[in-house]
Length: 377
Image (cartoon, rainbow, N blue to C red):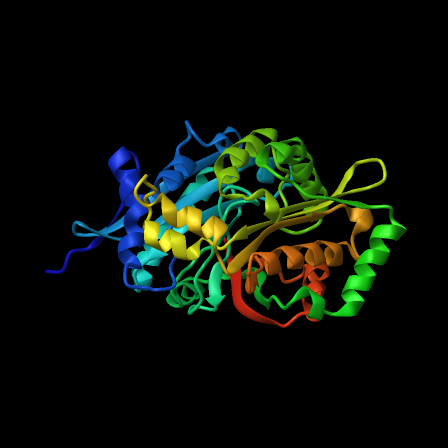
């Protein structure tokens, strides 16, 4: 008799470790899956470490066949979203599963039950606790590595969800941009960039070290709120989240890759954060950062021919006025100096056409699509 599937609620440290490490087994032979750092994943799920739990609730589940783990999922509620934005939604995240729709059905039953227990009305995912967490099921681009802040999954995930009555709610697109020599890049972009700087009396800030960046970090997050508050996935960023993300990501950021633009009064009106690609380095780390393999991370930070856009924030008063051209102009000079040949954008909502217009002036390809899926409960 074949073992039946069963669901276990994640409770113990051993459970959490099994939950975090399941994808390492599921995707061990997949060249495109980029593993996260196990320690950071555990910290994200831990209510005593991650301050997001001040305004969130969560329960995590493992699916077993006998003694073998065959799936996982997290049921998450962001109470700011529910109470302040009146979106009565239970999120699902950390969703990974073998190719058996029965396992997905059992896992989603647990998410649905968790949502009903909190009087919520619909499910959406995959996503994390907030805007700044990984989100979106990959629906196109399965032969492309994910970045350190995006998800990867096999093609059958969406098939499983659709068979359960889930439909697409939001779509994201990602682009790969070829970086040409700055001197050979479109003159109209360079001229336009200079004109915008002069017209609005703007100043570009370059940083020599991380210490110089810190005074602007809070302003960057405030600007993110202003930039994206009209998008459907927006949730206000809390002060404790800013502190948390500083601690989590600052070590990965090189000051050369951060550009800020201020107005004539010294107020921040735009910024961009780009990072060298860590995909190859994270593959080599395989979830664990030690003294003996740290050199992979160091090499990725300092000697790399690929980069990724992480965040771009532009004050609403300056949107659609050419600010993105200024940012990309400056980043192109940096990319040339560092011999970076390709840059990936992070997921952009399909509706966010203002950002996507920038890439039309450069050789680019739309290489990944992703979506969140939703269902009433």
